[in-house]
Amino acid sequence: MHLPEPIPPSVHDETFAGVTYHIRGELVPELQIDLGDVSVMFEHHVLLWKETQVGVELKKLPGAIKRKIAGLEFFVTKTVGPGRIAFSRDSPGQCVPLHLSQGEGLDVREHQFVAATDNLDYSFERIKGVQNMLLGGSGFFMDKFRATDGDALVWLHGHGNVFLVQLMEGEQIDVEAGAWLYKDPTVKLEAVTMGLKTGIFGGGGKLTWNRFTGPGRLAIQTLFIAPMEGIGSGAEAAGAGGIAGALIGGLARG
Image 1 (cartoon, rainbow, N blue to C red):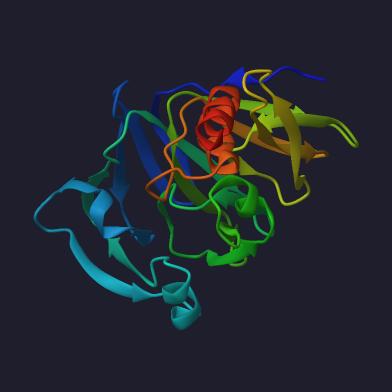
Image 2: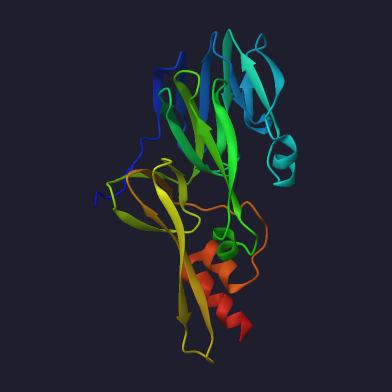
């Protein structure tokens, strides 16, 4: 299997799908876009600055009620040029650009979308079972982007540094449960757990990771920030803190 390789953190004067963009800064990166005729949608709280002539308006996403129940955004903001606009998230990491040709898709971990060209299908899927092992819930949500109306661009925020691995047909890799950022739709995801025994007072816990099976690309982020606050059970600790969290969770239960 090819080893994960780092994605370059900076981009200068890159053009795709009718949009030119730049990614600058190493700690909390800035995504700067030169707006023209192509409209760009984004979550309102990631706006960093804009030229005064650049206007913004709300865009309603399909499935608003389901998105609201799921705790996801059902309105995003969109803008069109001419002018420049910039975005950033309040977290150290990398801004990762994804170029999607007509017909291509992308599966993204929830709450890591920054911006995208407005010609995408932007939906979500509830992944049942995995979150039960991670954060004690009934599932987590995965953003799904599809380039159905020509070439398109998606920009994501990866916490920490981001590495990319290309999995061949049938190749597998186990990834810490909070560490994946995005994958190709052809890459399969399943949760795997392993019981841990500390040998101290008979305590134990569970270590949970995600197993990905190729073919396709998988991006791994080195820092995991949980979308939900608080850690309770040993399984939750395993999802948020790897082996150490599992051991602590087991000891806490006695």
